[in-house]
Amino acid sequence: MSYRTVFNGGQAEIEEKKSRFIASVRPVDSETEALNFLASTRKKYWDARHNCYAYTIGKNHELQRCSDDGEPAGTAGRPMLDILLKEDIHNCIVVVTRYFGGTLLGTGGLVRAYQKAAREGLAASTVIEKRSGQKLTIRTDYNGLGKLQYLAAKTHTSVLDTRYTDIVEMDVIVPAKEVSAFCSQVTEATGGKAKLIPGDAAEYADADGDLLLFEE
Image (cartoon, rainbow, N blue to C red):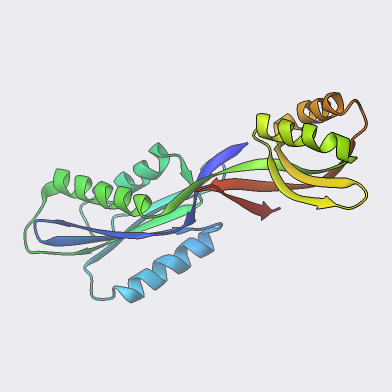
């Protein structure tokens, strides 16, 4: 299973008719973390009229919460939550702080402003796709090394580490649903000479070319 989430939160600001909308985004793994971030944001922007928020937690969006924080009903929290759900972002909170500029925006204008701020906040963040994976260690002689390297490149398998002694040990991580097929390919490529040692389950992701590993 894979799902999109925020790795590094970001911040962005927009202005609509002299009102400032400041979006603050943070990854969260629990409602407690979300509420703590909301509290710290309210403390930081204590003089703002509104700190509206939306968050969704769980691989299937099991927990969803949002608040208009004094804005007209349905003009802030729910539209921001809709952005998170439309973009399929999990385990994330967005808080949009508004400093009123003196001009009313109307309900439609508020919805557009809060959604735009949420989008900009996400754009300023690092969004990743987390995958469920299985670690494997492959032991082979040096004759099998090139075949394994070719197989890893061909199947876009992430290599975690390679150790060279009298044999070669290659640590890889494979999508959980592809473990069986990958093992068969290793056996075929090396003529059955490679030894496969199962490792731990882990989540992993690619962030601008860097492999991120999340131990379960």
